[in-house]
Structures are given as structure tokens and as C-alpha cells.
Image (cartoon, rainbow, N blue to C red; front, side, top):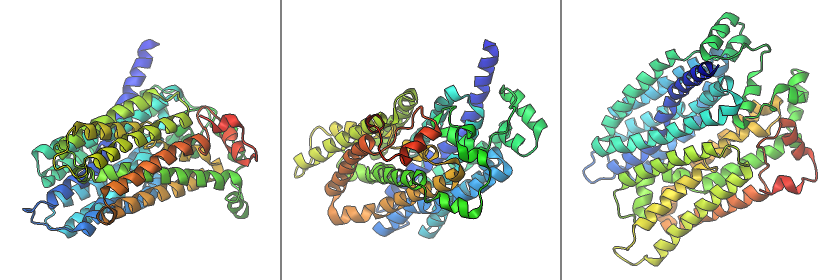
Length: 475
């Protein structure tokens, strides 16, 4: 029995790592904009850019990303989880090839636009793992995906120390092809195969993965609920809408006026506003510029590598804290981010007129702590909580709408950041980010619903009830 369990977890670990290699590429693409901008701003660069060009290079993939989310959502249901992920590699591979030979601003923009189509593949990876991983260990396997994103950022920083950005693009082009081919080693999920009448293939996949044969076919939407919360209670039988069947068009549209739909939508969107207002993605896409503007006196690429390492460590700690309440994690995460940024702001004020300010390591430690605390909740939870808050009948639609709003708010913040810096100054902008971090702690304490360990009915009933219990609102 022990050998069977070990064999199963080894195979699951193999599948998880092969699938998560996609997120390694995504992590590299996040830091890539900062590396490219740093090179293009050098006086010797053959490609000249201004502030407006910089903002578009950094933000355009996020603007395009919702298109990729829509496409991969359709392909995931039609062709299967694995094939959808392999097809998603196509724009990624093309984009790295274009960037590798880009000799003009126009080609860089084309490459970045194509790259944005492939940024939404994480949903497919999480869905696959949700359907094959044991509930008890699901958060652990999910955390591996986050760790690979941080590893991708680190790999990008290390490669940039030795190669030009065109060479790095060519390396990532080759890695993407290898990753795409390696997915042929991963079987399709038995749940998807059974749902499409391919029982024999499902049995073969179950035998290879060591999964007990499924007696009942579970809808894919149900699995999305399981994917995020990691609780067995969140299944179709627990939710009335799952058992009723497909509603009429009028009844379906009326569902969106129910408090259990629009209230969690507003709460989730507010969570995304807090996340984007915290400034984390700005640091991610403009890391070298931010470190330079804040007068960090060390090599920017080296510090970015340390920030990426902090992200990996934060991901591991987040995985270890999967039993902790979500509200508590948000308060600790946003509070730690706020204190870290407050140290940065105080330092910049104290040594504003000093040519070579002392104790430069204080800034480095503060930014590393900022990234670490972000990984405890403020970075991953807004994306994952979308699958926990909505009724089964509208879960896919509402989760998609809220996540698109999250991506577009990210685009807006990344796009306007250079303009705001030139207009208001780095101290003012990062002071605003600090205020948002403190506000996020208040959001976690008084607005965010607790979802950990609760069934879908319990979560939805909290939105329909006029008087929420104190227990639900306090960490």
C-alpha cells in the first residue's frame, strides 16, 4: 500500500512539474519587460524608446491576456486540459521567436502582444491538478505552480546577467518547444475523458495515475470549485443549482440579480483593486526602474534575482500555511507589505537630499520582505477566491468576468505608472501603494468573507443573510 501511494505521488509530482513548466515561462515573461526596458534605455541601444513606449512594452501583454483566457477556456472544454495547454504554447513559442530577432520597436510590440495571448494558461494547469490530485494534498500541488513562477523569474534574472535580451528570448523559445513536447508524457484527466464518453482511455489514465475508478461523472464546473478551496464539501450535491439542471434563459439571467452573485462579484473586484493598488505588479514589471528610482545602490538585476528568490520562499511558506484562515492570511500579508513599504518611504524621506545615502541594505531588505509578504495572500488569493464565491450555475461566467476585470486593472496600473512617476514623483506614488496595503488589511478584517473549510452553501448563505455573524467578519 505504501509503495502504491509513493508511486502515485511520484507520478503526480511528474505531471505537476511538467505542467508547471508553462508557469516557469510565464514567470520569465513577467521580469522580461524590466530587463528589456533597462537595455533599451541605454545610450548605446539601437532602438530608442520614450516613457510612453516603455509603458506599452510593459503593459500590452496584460491588455491582450483576456483574449487568451477566453480561447483556452473554450479549448479546455472541447479538446481537453493537456491539449489545450499544448496549443497555448503556440503563441508563446512564436512570441519568443519574434522577440529573439526583433530589431525595431514595432517587432518588440508584436512579440509582446502575441506573448500576452499565452499568459492565461494558469487556469488550465490548476484545473488539471484539481481533477487528479487528492483533496488532502491539493494545496501542496497547487503551490508547486506558484513556485515555478518564482523560479521562472529567477531564471530570467540569471540569464540576463550573461546574455542580451535577444539571446534570452531565443533560449526561452527552445525551452518552450521542449516543454510543449514533454506534455505528451502527461495523460489527459480521467474526469474529462469520462465526460466525453471515452471510458477506456479514462480507465487507462486512472490506472497510470493510481486513481480509483470514478463511479459518477462530476461536472467540470464542480471541479473548479474544488480546485481552489480544497474542500470535499464543495461539490455538486452540496449546491442546489448543480442538481436542478439547465435553467431557462430568463431564469438564468435572473440569477445575476441575486445577492449571492452580485455581492461576491463586488467583493472580489474590490480585492483586485486592493491587489493592484498595493504596487506588487508594478515592482514585477518595472523592477529595475523601481529599484533605480528608489535609489537602491546595488546592481538591479542581482537584486531582482533576490526578489525572485523571496517569491519562491514565500510560495513555499504559503503552501505550508494552507490550513490557516484566509482572512488571517490577508491581514498578515497586506500588513507586512505596508510596513515594508513604510520603511522604504521613511528611508527615502530621511536621505532625500543625500547624494550617497548610507545603510542601502535597508531598502533591499524592505523590498525582499515586501515580496515575501505579498506571496502569503495578496498575490495568489484574489485569483483563486473567484472560484469559491459564486453559485455553480454562474461560476464560470462570473469567475471569468471578475478575472478579466483583474487583468484590465493590472494593465491600467502598469500602463500609467511611468506617467505618474514623472508627474508626481516616486515617493508620492509608493506612498499611495503603502496606503492601499494598509487598506487591504482592513478589507481582510471587515469585508472579505471567510471561505476556508466552508461548503459552497455556507459561503452563499452569508451573502443572502442580512445579518452576518461576528465570527464570519473577524480574523
